[in-house]
Image (cartoon, rainbow, N blue to C red; front, side, top):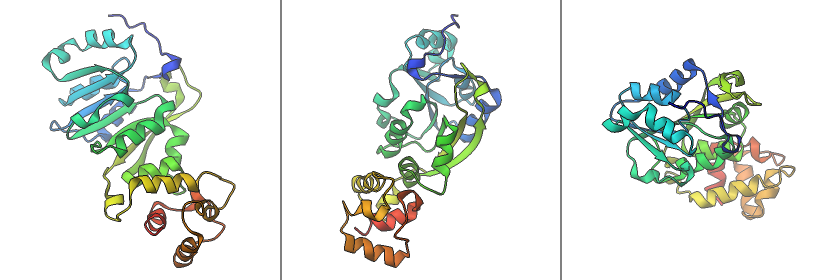
Length: 260
């Protein structure tokens, strides 16, 4: 078996060498045999091994041409038995709508974090939960009480939880930043459906609110919501006119966007 392919910088690869972290990711998935696990970026298969040990059906998506023959050889028995389905594809092109009752566990290239999270949260067929390796600072901002576009996007679809910090020394090659495992539970569109909020309009408002960070949020929102309506919302909710977009909670955005 050729185990000599190295991490490719252009694909944002850093291979994880931390059995305890891998076990924590599998445990956090709360996997049962009735589920399917969608694993993204199996690399050399360290996480794949632990997932297969649970007895669950695993679909592993790998973009790297070099990894496919290695994984096909390493997991030949599991592929033959049907427990493992190996797909050579870019995850951003993958059709997740063919899956059911699935849990997403991923060690993704960090440069696609935003697009990746949007794909699997905004879809009409989201996972039951997500367990994802991210840059530590990004994961911290997502769970922070103060918002960002990515944080608000994730919190409007599910409940993010910071699981564990993963120091950079546990990766090969060693990256420049530490990582963290993030869990997103209770994924649904209830935030929108229960309030009658249009998803596209919500994100149009959010993007407008964050467009000019030096401006107070009410000034930014004037571009998309009439000022007199904003004044009524600000007065009713006792919001400071000096508040910035990142100061507002997910629930407050629901009130603002739900009352344009």
